[in-house]
Length: 233
Image (tube, rainbow, N blue to C red; front, side, top):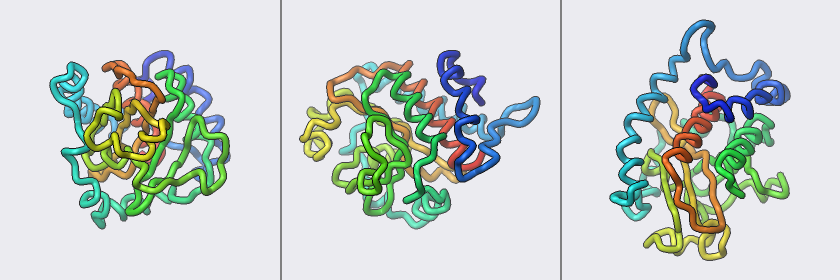
């Protein structure tokens, strides 16, 4: 699977297995079969094809996945999705160096001050890992859904590309936007084999940004790395 990553990201990813030795899966993720491709790679490639047209149109400005077009609450509380979320065992789990490494890679690759792996629960958002946070205290690792932008990517089940949330008819009222924490945002949903989106790998900036197709591809590849570990693929 790492062979699908750009060369620069492959170099960043090399220490991942070594640094993850103390994680909850002591043997680490088995990301590919000897001499072959991992079965999840086909799903990853299908997701690339499915999202490609939407992303190209979005980045050209003809279409933008607007949070106003989604119904996050109805999708967020679906029992099957919540069961898939709980089955990961990551809600309220202690920090894991492997996930921290992935968020560090995302922030570095996209030159973003903030990056996170998030889980969207029925009534809160939990941070599995976060780049740019000064603490790992429990209260700093979750936030009310009122501050969540990731919930819209989860509801849509597709990448959410926001160049300036202050101009979005829905997001401009989000407290994370009004207090200046998030201005631009790019999030890739983390989707299991049953097509349940449980959270995101996301990056954000405190200034407007025009995210490119290269940014989206890079973050999607890193989201695939996170998903492989989360879902034990």
